[in-house]
Image (cartoon, rainbow, N blue to C red; front, side, top):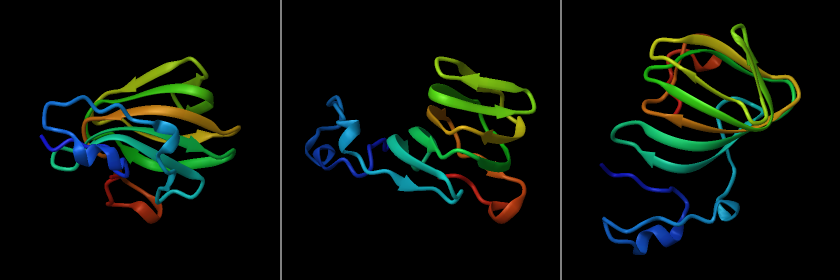
Length: 133
């Protein structure tokens, strides 16, 4: 496994079995392909698709129809995210099984911590056929 925290320069000095203590505040916010959503990657293994990230949703943002290729987990730190199955507000946790498809929205904005075993596959819109990486 080639796990790392991208953009965390102190990680270059660590040995393969060292703990990664990451100053999350110092990590840059990166734009995603979806306008209105930016992210900080906390852990990523590009070989396997494993990723843990903070996602910041601006009010009114919509993530187009996508499929979860493996289990996806989300903990809402602030705001809320909604889909046709329900609403996850600050302090709520939601997980979705492999194969689940949905459109996600954040009417009022949100900050979420998400865990992916594999990237999402987009099924509609400008991102159709792409994987979130």
